[in-house]
Image (tube, rainbow, N blue to C red):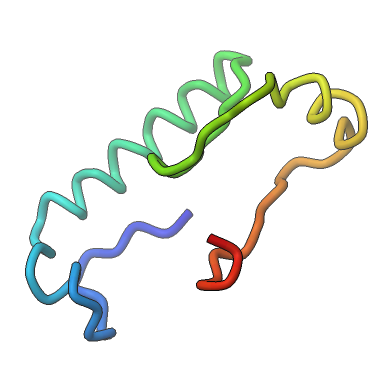
Length: 80
């Protein structure tokens, strides 16, 4: 995960209207919590707020993806 220290260069509406140092501290907090959880042996599952889980994802993550450290999906307009 990257921690942006400056406003992103794209002209997205969110960046234009709402970007400030709160986004920076959000990313710092997310990074610190994820690292601390990993060091303590906890599993970390990060999803967007618009994700709805209809079943527990851990059986698949612990089974089919047991040897994988990172599983991701691209965020494209036609996927959402």
